[in-house]
Length: 238
Image (tube, rainbow, N blue to C red; front, side, top):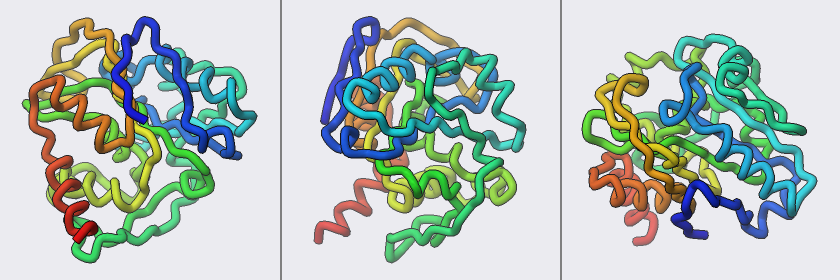
């Protein structure tokens, strides 16, 4: 699946695997009580939920966490995340299990603690806004950092390891099926919550590495974690 769509008319057409799934997980970027494009827009999530419902009666779960370990319910409410028959979950409320990194030579971490709910789902979707931070792309794969429990991981420690290396390891350890870059607006800044926004009216949708590649090319930026992922993928193919 590969798509660059107009956001205003976006209709989600799920892959056949969604029709067979019993549980579908949606991972938005919802770590802050600030609207799109700092976070994933409720409009794009609603379009994805509607698309899933057209082909499946699967349980739909939405999960997010934040670096401070704050409760997610007030954040979901502030973002107008109110989707019928969608269970909104908090990473901090889940039991974490240790998952081994399949890379023979990890970039940063040989294992990750991941919410067990993620591992129980049949189809995984990461939906992130279109953000360029300090000149680099932060798209659907970077969004996976929100799955790491604050009780196990602190931001200073992850940054010391090299955040792009951690993201590349996480990509292989918890393979998501679909990446969506919610580019209704484009955000450019030096911090994840501080910058400028402009209308963009696009949705990038594909396997996560390809979705982020399409977004990087559209933004005209280099995305470091993609370079690491592509290098590791080439080793797998040898």
